[in-house]
Length: 284
Image (cartoon, rainbow, N blue to C red; front, side):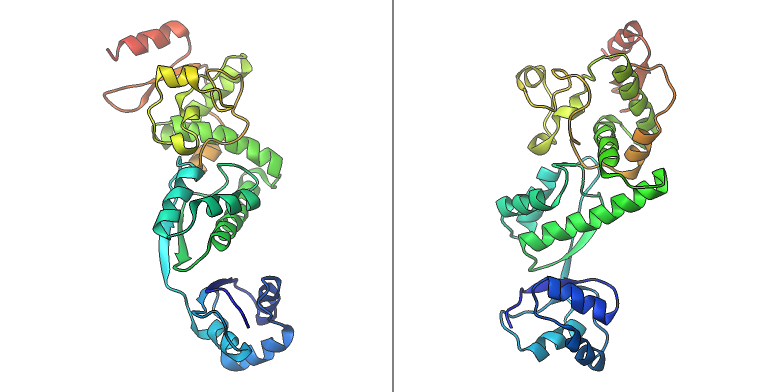
């Protein structure tokens, strides 16, 4: 039988695993479950088949013995999906174009959907397998977190929180500031003010670029909150749990502005423009 070099086997009963593998076009069926039980327990996780053609018996044996060699890839909060996929394509010797193509096929959001964490993936994984695996794990994580924080998971409502959380993630100096940054976003939106936040321009492959006055003038994208009113239409980066919590429950404040304190790296928050100008001048 023809197989991929590596396949992912979920945890579960032998029959459940056989059903899953059948869906993945591996030609496994319920009769194979009997043979598998005689051979031993099927290993959950990535299985290295290490061949392009195997007999049915060899294939089943591999499922109980052939753990794939794993490597780690880490996605940090605030990084963009575009940069992350670019980096892991290089690390795993994959096609960046194909990886982006499959990510776009599986993920409901252009950015902000992959959950920041350290993922263990096999050497030899292909672009489709990797994209599907990352999106599937992230979806489960989002559903679990939404149910814990909100009581239920509604994809549209959750996506809206992710947009706000992504701006908070880009702007806040640390997790303690996140509820305050979220309150500034909320307060400015309520007053009909443009957000005018640099972090929204660090989208995609611009993730680590300094936002200049020229960039603010020239960027005509949907993410430019100096040009466009309201929030960006989709997340600008991946987000951590602290940013999500802040987006759901901002601090209660009158703040409308903030500027980074060069000495501490934290932000000074202001309720009026005059206070904000004073905070800016104090940095000179």
